Amino acid sequence: MPNSALTHQHWGVEALWQDLEPVLPGLSIEVLARVDSTNTALLERVRSDTRHPGERGGEHGTYGRRAHDMNPCLLVAEHQTHGRGRMGRSWHAQPGASLTFSLAVPMDLADWSGLSLAVGCAIAQGLEPQPAAQPRLQLKWPNDIWLDGRKLGGILIETVPAGSQRMAIIGIGLNVARQDLTPQALEGQFSTGFASLDEFEPGLDAPAVLARVARPLVLALKRFAEAGFAPWQAEYASRDLLRGHEVVAGNLEGVAQGVSAQGELLVQTADGLLPVSGGEVSVRLGS
Image 1 (cartoon, rainbow, N blue to C red):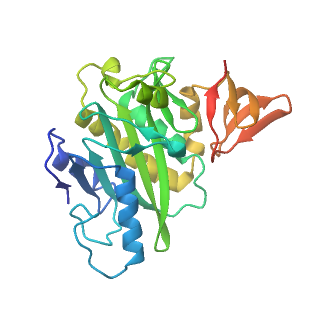
Image 2 (cartoon, helix red, strand yellow; image 1 turned 60 degrees about the vertical axis):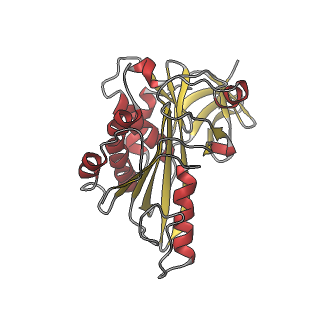
């Protein structure tokens, strides 16, 4: 059942749960006014559950749920104080200016390749379901969502063992309104430029954005579990920010030529067409 803490926005948790639970049985939805990191909170819960099977834990770290409950959980934070991005980067957010949430789902996959790309497609579809020939929302490999050539948000996927399966923690951060961040935060988080959803559709707030993206995200995870990234390849290509641009990916320099059916970035270099498969790889638009 849904479970919410005291918050300052109306999230429509009951309606959201009624929409999602038939697709994701056992789901709980929790909304917190403040948390360090939604991903970290869910990861710590699963790790605690795995270390102490069969025991009942206290309230610390469980946010009202049963200890050792491995059912899906959607955890939303009105204010995330120590959000994390890929490769250890910080994600700065002011209360009410962004949507930050994580979805914990048990998954048993032989190949996780391309999951962040499929998630990006789902988020973009939820916000811009019928784009023009040139979509305003684009995807920058491997985990960024851009609006009109500037970074709008990001995706952080982490996994942890959970019995015979793994629990996937899908973290999403989207800028909803303009923020007055310090120069240091702007330099670290928005070196490519800052975009927010109030530019895309004035009047959108975080609960409305969550209502649009939650179901597409859940359906995307189920589809990915069945068929991997390949069904998303064409959709990703239609929003591919890097294709045709000069890029630097680790030690590779060349022109991005889309992504493979496994979600690899394909770079045309002097040595031929080479794949970049992720990991600790930073990709940026070339000058």
